[in-house]
Every structure is written in C-alpha cells, then in structure tokens.
Image: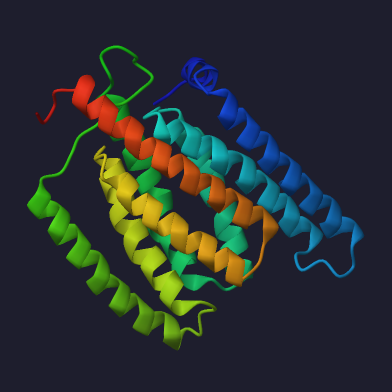
Length: 240
C-alpha cells in the first residue's frame, strides 16, 4: 500500500489547473460550512456541512490521483467514501448509499492491494493500465442496462428521491469500480456517464458543494480517460 512518501510524490505531480479546481472546491465547501452554522434557513444542518467539506476535499484529490493512475488515491478514497455514506443516508438517496457502503467501501481496499502489486516500471507510485476487448465492452454495456432496470424497481419500493438517476448511478458505478479495481482504462467511459448523471441529480436535488464536486469529477474523468489510454499505449505491455 502507498506510504506517506508516495502520497507526497503524487501530490507533487498535480498540475496548476488541478490546484485551481481544488481551491474552488475548498472555497465553496467552506462557505457552505459557514452558512450551515449561521443561516437558520440552511437546507443542511451545520454538522452535515462539515461532513460535506471533508468529502469535497478528499473526493477531488482522490479523482485527481486516480486519473494519474496513482496508488495514493486510496488514502483519500477511503475517507471520502466514509463521509459520503453519512450524507447519502441523511438525504435518503438509497441507491447511491448502497453503492458506496456495500460496493465502493470494501472494494476500495481490494483495489488498493491489486494496484500496489502492479506498479508502473518508470514511476513506482503509479499502477499499470489495461484495456478490454470490443466484445467485452458490449457485454458490459448490456449488463449495466439490465442491472439499472432491476435497481429502479427496488428503489421505487424504497421511495427513493430520484429513482431512475439513482438506479443508473448504482449500475454504472458497480461496473466502473470493478473495472477500476482490475485497472482497465474503460472505467473512465463509465465514470464520465455516471458523473453526468450525478451532476443532473444534484441540479435536481440542489446542493452547491456536491454539484461543484461532481462537476469537477466529470472534468477530471475526461482527463483520466485520455491519460489512461496514453499510459496503456506507450508504457505498459501487460495485455498488448
């Protein structure tokens, strides 16, 4: 697993635009905390705005490092997943709650172990990138749609706030995190889709902190797809 030294090395790799996005996220999350404790009409209670703040900061650094294939992302992922579960439970967003608690949280540690065992030859704080075959891509797409239909039926019975968006977030997220665990670059096609859904969900269920966070996720997912394709084509020969 990544140590403190590797985390520092990964942080040093961040670009200026990533620090700018991080600063925007910190500013918006900080204002939300202030509003939560000073505005009696605030939608979120004060304690939940602190949860949001922690999730926002850890979340953006997690996606920055994951896009670079950095093993250190899992330090931030663990904290982010934990506090995000609290937020989702408070607002009864049960599909994504189940995804984070039952899937993301335990797989996070499995992925951490697997990534650590397949390190890049040139930069050891990075992992290797792999790719799927075209017919497996089709199977994955069909599986996502089928899973989403089943998840929607369950979420309707649970009186979910946004059942269709939540169902597709659940289905795509499960497949994406498995692809991430095994280091497949196609994870980012799914992350882009799920981030578009998440942005739509937080526009409908307005929350400035999470809308900003998911918007940053979407931008970084596009960058991550480009970077992982580049890593697979130019550096790694694991499945060529």
